[in-house]
Length: 275
Ligand code: HEC
Image (cartoon, rainbow, N blue to C red; front, top):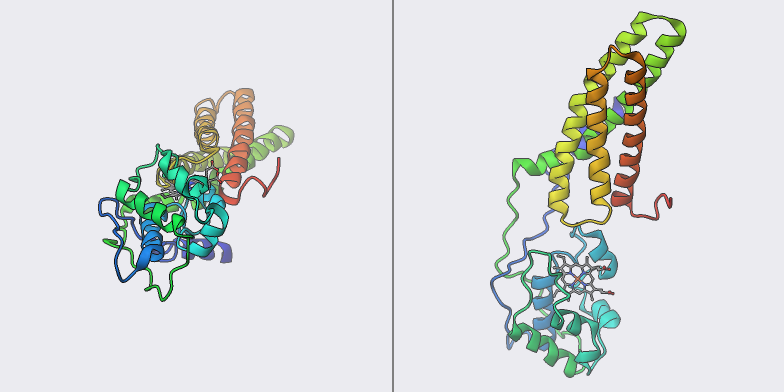
């Protein structure tokens, strides 16, 4: 009961909402006299790159590569060769069109902004002195749609089919051994509950994936998840044919476990269960 309460709490409005600001894409950052080159460059990077490279970002790969673009000192230390823009990853990745990634919906820095970055690095990539608190221009709180809540309910739904399908398999096997028809009823009851919860898991997962953007391993996870839902539905449809019913439940259990495994890798990273 406690776990259910905790789970529900985790999905209460507000609890999981990140307040990460939308990155304005159509306003440009120009060197402001009261900012200086360093702070202007920082503001530009925040505006163009923080959507992926910030602690609030959902793009784990981007965060691993560059955790927080607003932290100019660390960013410069890792990706800037002071005095030499062309040798600075921070500069040439943008120049070559590699960052922001082509397939993202984030607009690249303008020529002016790139010139600003060039000037800052050429000038020795100094740190802002007396820099103002970071201000994200034109940023508005993200409006939260209903589908966002459905997407975030994905971790809740996945547990139902993952538990119900193997339990159905177990009940059905035990029914064969003990010849107790009550166990057959139990198996059917579990499958009947597994189907709608698997459908909810798949729907919320689909929405969640759309919010996350391109993610490594997502396709495999997605289709294993859909496969779990389909196999459990098929099992229910052939429920009168015992052997086929058992086979499909076994398939659904295995495919479901694999879907869970690859979902775990997406959430916790490939090192969590290195296999
Ligand atoms: C839509 C998301 C997104 C945006 C916006 C974005 N990046 Fe990235 N960035 C990534 C991802 C993902 C990676 C990791 C790429 C990989 O390892 O394959 C990355 C990697 C990097 C790296 C490390 C490269 C390496 O190979 O070590 C740098 C530097 C970088 N980005 C700079 C920037 C800069 C500067 C901007 C803004 C102009 C920016 N990025 C905007 C997603 C993004």
